[in-house]
Length: 67
Image (tube, rainbow, N blue to C red; front, side, top):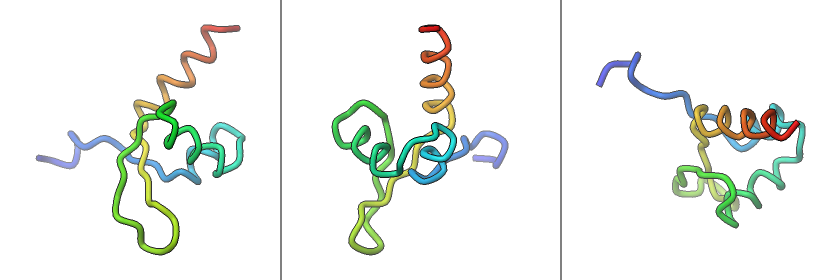
């Protein structure tokens, strides 16, 4: 698979910054199934998540449609 075909993955912190919410909120959305994420083995106490940029873009578009 070439680099061009790979989708950008964002951390919970990056998603939180873009949505202007706390990182805990993003983690809560992942845990309750509201936000699709890839779970990686934890490196410390916290679970490690990556959110596809396309998932974030779809969420942002959905918010714009509500306006």
